[in-house]
Length: 435
Image (cartoon, rainbow, N blue to C red; front, side, top):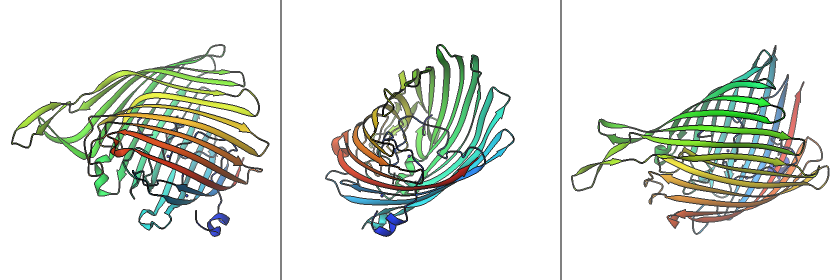
């Protein structure tokens, strides 16, 4: 998938009103702002309520950031994000209907120009057919302040994202299976100077699999992702057209659960990226026009996820991936992206959990160009992040979490370098009932 998302406090009134998104007392792998998880978890962000029931949560997350604008030199800021979330599940025979969403606001203290609302609503149908086949039909709309770390600087831009999709899996415990997903996403930026980063993306991903309990599950899959940048016009030989790119990949995967302590997911891929058009007409400023080829990409990719629990108290998570992805926040045609993450969690008691983690994200921007918000074209980034967490949840009703993190971005050119240190406090209350 191509384009597959933390919030900030001021006074006691916000603290007392905190009621939160449900979260277990574990130190989950941390990302900056609304960056997606290192490993995607589904077609949409809304988690279905299973059975007949509802979820009702609320939260306040407060983040003090030494460099909230991500500039050099930095500018300190505090962001407070109250959020209320709800979900409803309704079984219909063997099928499961669900709907959910949230509403909240990002408030940057003493910098009201950045204050924005955030909305999310989505839902769909999780279906079953016989004993082997299951799938989903889903849709989602979200609108929120964009805090993604690959942006040149943090600006008061809201990104709207509309997603529809479906999945199918037919697999028995032993033997062959098949399936696939289809996902369409449309991203729109509200700031006029960021319209060049609007994206339409449609991905088709069929797969075959073979499962044998003694060995694990093997899979062979592929994907076709057609991407269009509707706010970006290039000149082909035939005339002006919207900028486009196609991602093709083939993947061989393996999954295995080794007892209760170790779970492994591994994949090797071949990736090919084809710009459309593959050459553009470019003026030289002297009245001449040249036909300039646009380089694609072909090469290997991989993905790995390992969860290891050597004792009831201690657990580790490792993830790594290399892929080619859409460029939704930087002036480039596509990105060759490499990510690594290690996270350790230790239960100090029945209610208290501590965690440490580190991540690295290396991005190479292909066919990059300068934009209104990027005066120099971006060539590459390396973002390193280290964090420590502690979470307290004596009962399901409420949760208190603290996280301290340090992040550095090393860019070419170095105009986009920055460092930041954050301290975050999360307060949550979870109300819900399901059958």
